[in-house]
Image (cartoon, rainbow, N blue to C red):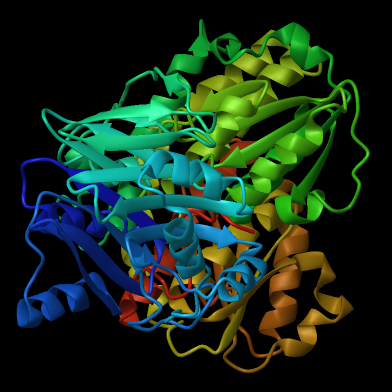
Length: 608
């Protein structure tokens, strides 16, 4: 959600800011702008639309030239997308960019109006902060920032420049993520590492309330109380190529093809002598034996990975699992306590609602486990235990490889817990783990096996107004993700439904030609699922069935069959995910949509 960048160094600042912002386009935005020190003055260029629109505008009107500045891609919250509401926003002496929401901006705006500050140009909460900084500015930027931070409430990250402090950039965060990159004689501010990986792999994580001062190619940090802070320098473990398309037409198809490597990288360090071993994550068999109940809390795709985890853990480890959407879990007064485990799954580790769950868990006696992809992220730091996935950077908004590695971690956790609790034998655990080890090769095989079929079948979906995904058991859990993937990038209304529930209302929606995608990989439920497929087929549905290569599917049940390799049915979701991703991808491509940047969506949701 939105993107902040900043730069101080010898390069052309405008070029650096625009280049860095392009690497953050996946976060979602509807306007863009920069502010650069030029000959001691702050020059602003901004516009509604894409970064290409900003570049066109600067070509016509002239671009700022300098060596220090800030930039922003905005996703509208307060005020419609427009040139005026675009960031940066300025007071008389202060210019800022801002991610997040200022909750008390109305009362602060009234305070400023009461004190004869009436020159507001936009409808944004951000301009209020710029004006407030300007109101309190006494020539000491850090003291001014500290004073304003004590007055504003909300979730935010700020990049700030003061007119009388040329070649200097200030940055601060509360909740919304922000990093500071350190290069050779140059420093950067960014919302995420991909923005700066072209220039440096070394970065600092900015913590809540910490103020960064970037000047003369270096940075120093201080707290809200003015105390100087020494911080640990981190190094990204991936390079610029990982954040590039590398010949693929879109990041999404690249990331689908990266899934075998991501799964292998994630599971290999956690398997020892043929058995799962999560001790490096702080998880021992003794700890796993102590849990009576498990709560899995997440949002969107991560929540769907949790749904698969629920089915697998309950089936083989025989532990009760509740899966909740993070935004709902917080407000329903959940009954959690000692000997309970709360698992928070988040690709970014910064998801606002998921972060808030950690605060809820503290003091209950329950343990928290984070499953995240970003090292040093807020959720990872605050949880009692953490399992890092190793998906590398995921640029496409529609998650694929992050979901796949989340699934792989859920399986490792389920297998070790089942073995620790004595619900499966060592031999059974070894067999399941062995099949998981074979998964990278099987995923690669599946991509090759179903690619052409998915491309063809997707052409049958592009004219649909609405469709259904159905399945039973693990297939139902999986169909939730398939439906989400399709709707978020194709803009076709899609719902997932438990196949056995069709007769309780939803079957009334089925009419001639309506696509119904049935996931049927669970042999123990195959007959029942085929019966449900025939029910919708009899009412005119066009049926597309995803099943294993040996499944006995009646010819009159399926218009189109997508067959995948056969594995232990408990592990089939990891293979069945692939054709659902490809169907979504090619449907979106065939409709001419912006696959990697679907409308209205952001990669990381860092506010409620």
